[in-house]
Length: 302
Length: 268
Image (cartoon, each protein chain N blue to C red):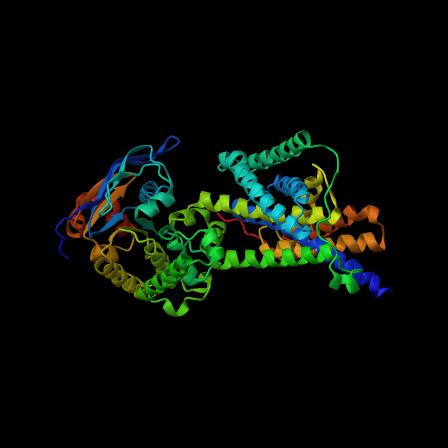
């Protein structure tokens, strides 16, 4: 058995998985608080990548270094995505807060289709080349076979982001309010938590994470178009369900498992079936552990 | 117990009516609470007491009637149809008949969340760990500990709330409600399911809260011994209507009440 090859695949899987995890976090946080599957989340990720593309395109002309451009482009993308997430919730979901659960779900699908087509019309349906902003680091040369410089940036950024998110949820005022809202929304209101604001914050945070993922993936694959949000969204949703939707560590675990399963399947069997491995795994988990890897079976409250 | 001299009015409910479809759950009920009072709302099961609470705390929007609050030192407001978190911020806090703590948060965190509407650290403050954020966090923890001491739960502050005993969970609910700095505390059957010893402690706690924290308290309660011993005034509801009000002595002797409520218990 070729361990070197296996290790190579594993590294690729972890990188891919950590991106899935970033997007999956947005799904799972929103679901945890308002039990809505925000199908337009993938589009926020795509918009993040587009904004970064445009900003990076302009900034490259100014002659800044690649990493500086990447950071600046990412910051603008985050702000844009946050605004989109906030607005999306206001327009598409808030008016349906007390409607039957199916209505916001359909609204989410509608928002997803709208955003995808809006970007396609406003920008282009074609693939655009995303500039290579992360130059190869010299110190990475010995292990470049396993982890490229872009991958290293991705791993660092996702790790830092996830730690920051954990601290935010565990220790800050807004984090406590989010947990309280998740556990009992009516009671949270009654102890004075402005639940509407907490929900807005959740969408903003989720969108920021998605935009980070969008920028990272775009700089890794080197191309974007208006449809990338669909598949990424679907995969991340799969990751969230895999880990147990509503469960934050579950989203991270689900993302990693999904990424690794995909790369291993693609590497050992056939890359043409990459998606089949991802969704096949989902089916398997749903049969064996319907609540997901870390999810708890929820008893219906009466 | 002597009725206190009536101070300022804090809560003024008049003509409160709540319909659910064709069902009139509350029919033109009025109720006033004055500063420093402990008022009980009693009545047989299904009389509409909890619905009354829900109307006053913003969970339901009343069909008709007026709910006015007069917070000390602030201007009066009509709160019909206001969101619950607004009403809490204005100074009314409540507990529920069934325990509704945040089970996956610690005892301390449960109380701290009650401070949410009194603090203002933004995400940005928290990220930058600004001086304001640090100070506010410290104050929140201190205040929460003080409240936990008051209800006798300071030594279990780091336990998950779901691991507390039943009586302790009930006291934690009161501490959490008090963390919002209310001028009026609404307790929905605080003694439900408690043993006589726990009820006695609760009795003492409620009286202490009134005297130490200068709070007015409105409570729904079935434990007649508790109600009669701590209430200054009592309102009685039956089938959504108010049938009597007065001091505990007056209520005990009111034939209408004996028939509707105490009579029912005597038969049971």
